Amino acid sequence: DSGVTQTPKHLITATGQRVTLRCSPRSGDLSVYWYQQSLDQGLQFLIQYYNGEERAKGNILERFSAQQFPDLHSELNLSSLELGDSALYFCASSVDLISGNTIYFGEGSWLTVV
Amino acid sequence: GQNIDQPTEMTATEGAIVQINCTYQTSGFNGLFWYQQHAGEAPTFLSYNVLDGLEEKGRFSSFLSRSKGYSYLLLKELQMKDSASYLCASDRGSTLGRLYFGRGTQLTVWP
Image (cartoon, rainbow over all chains, first blue to last red; front, side):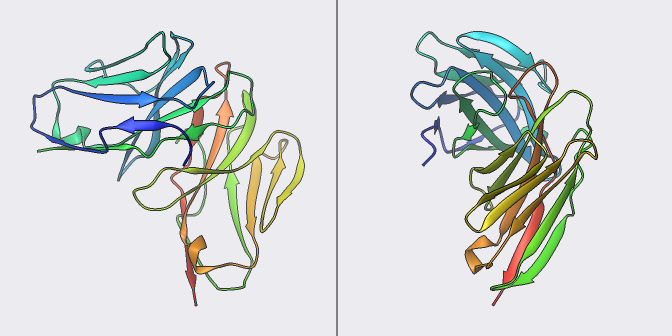
């Protein structure tokens, strides 16, 4: 158990819908990352937050958004869902932004769009 | 995966030693991670290298050559439970902690 908690674990929804994925980082970790893993792409960085502020954006679609709240939990919002958005979405956290700090991954949220 | 190259598949037998190689883009390089991932599960941290040389952790060791943009993960005394995907990831650029992952090397350990 990495200490990073993600909900829901599994989600099935229809195209065009909107879902919210939730992440609680490890206690004391200020930095939160979201990654997408699909069968044909591998792990792709989406976005990073540090202590409530957005720090970096990767391959995140405009239909997707995220935020980190004062209690440091984070949410990833996926809207106007398409079949291709079906993937495993991981949240990860680390203590801070110093290089080398271990980045711990949650168990992931399986999203299936039908 | 932003120029992370690693073999797609490898096989080995129980008790053997296997070396999984990884090459990466050196520009803006901060450090190199290795993760283990079983299908449908979270990646689990194995090692982190920032300086040249070999880091040993029990049955697993990881090596880095910054000048060559090269790393390897060495697994000794292989066990069936080591069958998994091994992900090489580089920490690059000014935003520390943003990882660029390879596609992973699927290791199968046979009895």
